[in-house]
Length: 295
Image (cartoon, rainbow, N blue to C red; front, side, top):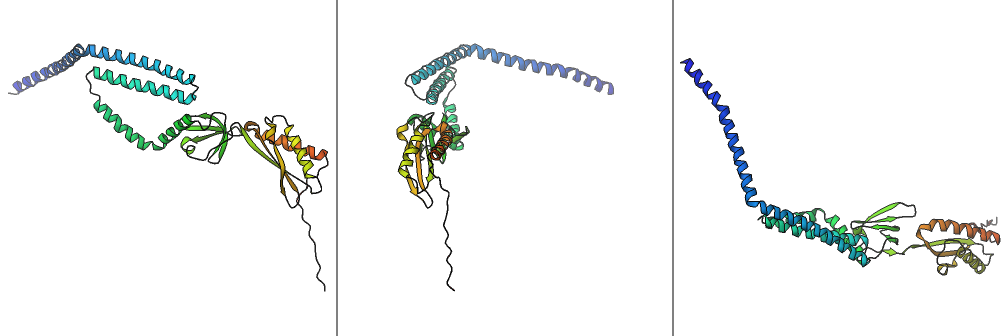
C-alpha cells in the first residue's frame, strides 16, 4: 500500500513541470498571435499615423519660422515674436496629433475632455502665474516701455534690461538686477523717463552774495560738464530763502547709467566755481542774545 502511494506521488511530481511549461508556451503563443494579428490588421494605420505626425511636425516647425520672420519684419518685440511662433507650432502639432490618433481609430473626445479638466485645475492652481503671463502679454502688446527705458513702479526704479512673459528685469545704478512680476506693473502708476533720469542738486550761498549772478555762474558750470546731452533742459534758480542761506537749486536730465557719476562731477564743479569767485557757502548758525533782568 505504501509503495503504490509513493509511485503515484512520484508520477504527479514528474508531470507538474511539464504542465506548467505547456501553459507558459500556450500563453506565449497567444500573445504572439495577438501581436501578429494586431500588426496585420493595423500596420498600415500605424505607418500612416506615424507619417502624418512626422510631416505635421516638420510643417509646424516651418510655419513657426515663417511667423517669426514676419514678426521680425514688422519689428515686433522679440519676446512677443517668439511667443507667437511657439504658439502657432504648438497648435499645429496638437491638430496633427488629433488627426494621427483618429487614423488609428482612437476617439479623441475623452482626451479633449481630460485636457479641459486638467486645464481648469491648472488655471486655479497657477492663478498667480497665469496672471503674470497675461500681464506680460499685455506689456509686450501695448509697449508702455521697451528695453533701455528708465521706469519707476511700486517704488522701484531702474533701467529695463529684459521683458519676459512672467516678469520684467530692471537694473539700478549699482548694476543690481531687480525682478518685478508683471502683475505688479500692469494697472499701477508707471513713470517712464525713457533713457534719462532727473538729477536735483542744491547749494546755499550767503545773503551777502548776489543770487542772480550766482545762478548764472552755476548754470554755466553745469552745462559745461562733459556728459550732459541736452543742455537746454538744465534749470537753475533760487529755490528758497532759508534762515542761514539762499538756496540755489539745479534740475537737469542726465543718462540714468551716469546718474551718480554726473552728480559727483557737478557737485565738485559747482564747489570749485564758487570758491574761485569767493562766494561763501554758509553753515547753519543762530544768534542768541542774553537779556539780564533789572535787579
